[in-house]
Length: 49
Image (tube, rainbow, N blue to C red; front, side, top):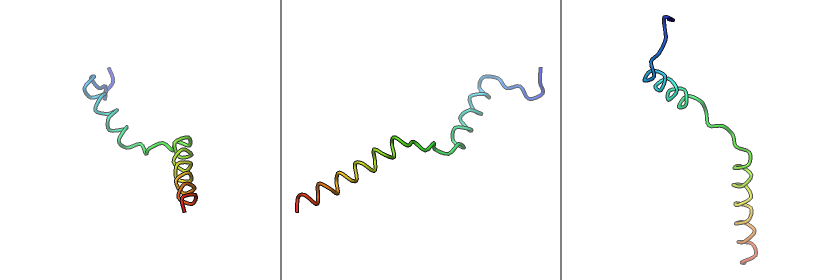
């Protein structure tokens, strides 16, 4: 038995803590979709004028 072995409750707490600490991963596909949507909105406004 190790000195710092955790029970299941402790393991869950540690994983939750680490999930909060890690920065949000940069999602390239999501970013491209966002840029594309903005571009299409801009294009639509230009054609409406």
